[in-house]
Image (cartoon, rainbow, N blue to C red; front, side, top):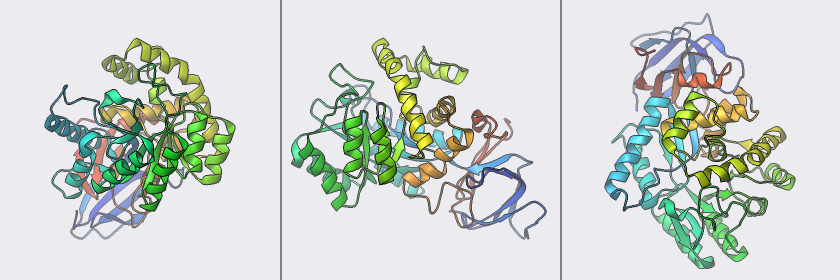
Length: 406
């Protein structure tokens, strides 16, 4: 994007490699990439560069949300064109309002995630990096059919055909729903698995043949273990697990994206103004609140067990609006026993890695793309300091400047 040099001075750098902030750091950005990182006392040659004085504010990699969906609207609720436009607006707001520079989609109907990914990549619009899934694939009478984002498949060949369709339409990964969930009708329960062995095998076989990663919605021990053994790239949710699930994740080097927001954000559980405001506008059905409340402690327990065991974990929210989602999820990680450092890594380095983008993004290191945020206070002291957003950079260009407000 950028052809010219930008120098950021007086930064307190949190690079998401070393847990100690480095005050008075200077960063040189050239042609959209980080060219130099100079410690305190070292001055770059400025030449014709644009110099931005950060005045001691905290410089971090951009944040990520590794499990998102567009708004769940049927075509009866809103015409497709308007839904696609709304999704683009939500994606752009995540970047400019909250500094979320990368998003991994977990299901979107009509390939609207692919459309926006292409629109951002071509420079038609300025937005975050989008990793697209197309539809999420489930069985007839499977998970979250009311969302409008599910594609019902049956039998081995039904899954094979659907996966080939997603690939043909330009997705980055395949989203398979192996089991039920918390938000659904009585026949859509997270303790139930939905696919038969031959359906599972066929789905994973074709994904592996075509070298597409599988993002596996798995919410009970049997589904989690099936996903890992069949070679899922990531397990999403893991509301109920067992010790063997964690052993297998470690053995197979499988990613885990816990989406705590799904079981934790109910009127009974919220304990700060951001959560309260979100729950109020979400206005969830009482029956869903009860199911979430009942699932919450078990979910929190397996989250902490996986974290303590050293499972590779990335941050994904599975809620909307996207500008609030990752920030709320970060708060829940800390509430459930993660350190602020673990949480920050999950939302930067690890989330970029789960998307296959670790070589270019996720940390502040020489040679990487300059997708960066600047916040007014240290998120390692309080994770909610990521909300004190001052600047957002995409490939070294300022795409959001909130300093006057700050």
